Length: 210
Image (cartoon, rainbow, N blue to C red; front, side, top):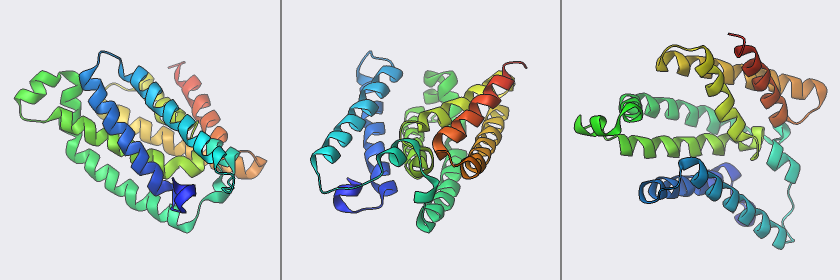
């Protein structure tokens, strides 16, 4: 959509990702399929449809490899501003819904009885993830964003003793991976997305020795 209508790709990715997140939330409530199965179905279907549409519209020209695997040179000043503004907003919203989100993870029924609205918090959280994907797509790439979301959390789970500690460690690992990966990308002229994920993978392997 962004390339077809000449709109900033971060905006269109956020819009489409939010729609997918809402569909995932609704389908998860109404079907017996697992969240992983539904996510794989929706995400890969959306990606395939998008690539088919772009391939059919021959007048559209874009860097496919940069879109799939990230290209730090494609990042503009507007993208950087969006990252800072949206990042701060996402942290603030997550702080507001944190107690409800954590309680719903432990036991949704108990959380609902305490008027914490865990379902609403889960939907908000999924939309926040959509926003994170949207603002990260130029740096990380479509295919590797999932890895950056999963690997820091997986490492934090190996070495943390509480949910708060897990969040803090995930943030540290994520920031370290991004900064180190971008430095490696600029130094060795490699794609930014894979460079970031390789650093994150190395940190995860180190955590296995803990």
